[in-house]
Length: 150
Image (cartoon, one colour):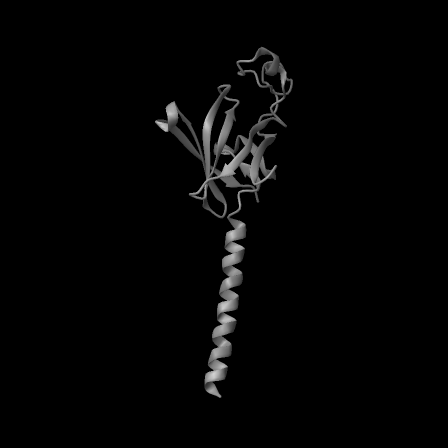
């Protein structure tokens, strides 16, 4: 009788552990809204297309240009036609795909300098992700940590 009770307890513990593991794996999903460093902006990451991620700026700490008082635009874009696009709503990455190592990779646009980089997104915790942009075939990279908006 004791072995049946012990076995039942073991199954309950295993089931509970499985639920916690599933919850942790789900929490580590990169979808959601994220603060960039120094909480300068919030970026919404969502699934788009087939097995891909997209990211759009949805909030800025300072949404207006201090000189003009108008909403900030993509002023640093090398394409003069795109310099009037508002930063809020701007797609900064589209079509990031999951690699064999489990991170996400693709092209990431940085409105601070108007350049597009080879980018890598890696979850480093349930509420922290590392975003890395690289040039020269990955020889030079810069990384930053983003935190999930609660």
